[in-house]
Length: 425
Image 1 (cartoon, rainbow, N blue to C red):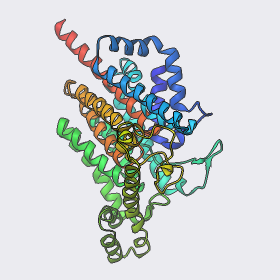
Image 2 (cartoon, one colour):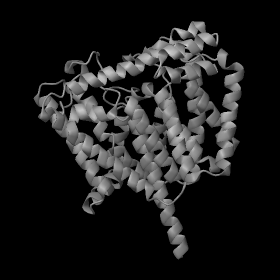
Image 3 (cartoon, rainbow, N blue to C red):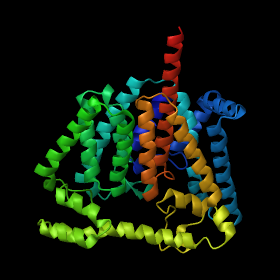
Image 4 (cartoon, helix red, strand yellow):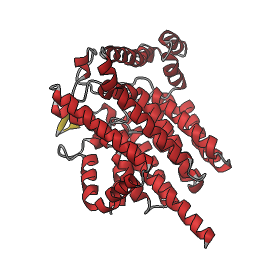
């Protein structure tokens, strides 16, 4: 039952994104409710396993524990300085989300490669459909969650790149349905433009191909990409991007967004030259998202005025606007390294870097399999998102990332153990 609920939790975040994260009655949102339920139902399984891992000095358990403990230090530091309690609790979540890995590891022992492949197939297809519908229809509906007016009722899929990496890694276990799901996800990614997301798709899939690339994988991915190219060059100009993103799936608009990252004037000229005069003026807003981030990062780094602040950070509970940043009601600098630095100092950054290195080392030591390439590709994809957005500090990315990583790692270890036992038998 808990395995099914865990997969439903991951699917909810991956398909619906931010609205799913706020579904429920505060503070019992999906992540917190599942964590509480796991602490009761699976206490002997996952918590007992975690304590046993501490006893045998397993590195990931000890360093994750230190990271979570340092989050509590930052939380206490913030409260001692008079910062807001509710804000501090929300910011602290970036530390306790890592517990989902250990829960997922226990759940993963109950799954196998075929089930996980089918999971990615179903979630990938639904996420792609939801992303396309959002771009064409629901992004234009001014509806909010009744119990939380600050959150829109509809949003883009949380991590379409994460799903794409999973589909590519497990493509050998999927039929043409895998290629169809990939095509839908690629179109959804283009219709909900995000350059960090596109980069995360490229880098994550590159890791998978480097570690696992084979003829079947090339055929499935090639078929999905071919379908997308046909759509873009035939009816792309008729498919709008999501509201507020401007443009369509026209090739010139897609290329112009990439160019606008470094040269908005050149991107504007490209669109005018291709006849997209209406969309040309909105391309400057795409550069503005880059400029806005740099200014924000400079402001918050400038707030670290003493050695103590560099070492320990401001503590949780402080709004970025209170640090001198020209933003309102924003808790994330849209860069996870700076998030840790500004709130938890260099100590917090170092602890998370060590935990991340241990995760990579653990996964890399797995036997060559779709699990290994998928996990490493997804780590790269999520970290790419985390460097340019609010990823690892937000539940709609962090929770499915840690929980799914734990599930796949647990399933991979069980598969390796079973194979070794069969050889010995």
